[in-house]
Image (cartoon, rainbow, N blue to C red; front, side, top):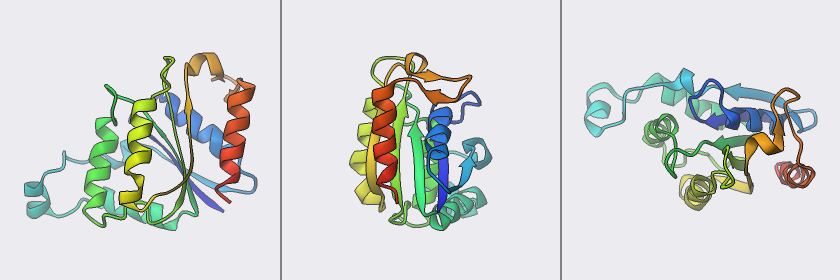
Length: 174
C-alpha cells in the first residue's frame, strides 16, 4: 500500500507533520512518502497568472502524487480558524488541473494544535468540503493540546484513548 503523507502547513517544525508521519508509521507494510509543502511553493493563485503562465509544475507534481497513492494521511494546521495559506494556494492551483483533486483516494484527515480546540474548525471545513473534491474520507481525528498528548522526542501519541481512535481510523484505509 502506497501512503501519501503531508501536513497542510509549511512550518519546518510542524506539529501536524509530526502527527501525520506518526499516523502513517502505524500502517503495517506501507510504503510511506512524506511530502513537504515547502517543495510546492508557487505564486498566489489568480486567473490572470493561470492564463498568462499556465498551471505551475508544482501543482502538476502534487496532483500526480495524489493519483499514485493508495491512501492519504493529511493533518491540517489551523491559521485563524482556517487553512494555512501555503496549503490553500497549493490546493487552489491543483484544483485547476481537475476539480477532483483527491481522485477518490481513501483518506484520513486529521488536525492538531497546541490548544484545547485541536484545530477542529479547519478539520470540519476540510471534511465538509471533501466530497466536492473527490475525497474518500474514511475517518477524521482532532488531537487537542498537542504537547500534552504527543511525545515529540519519542514521536508518538501518549494519550491512550486518542491512540486507539487513531488506530481504528487507520484500519479503515485498507
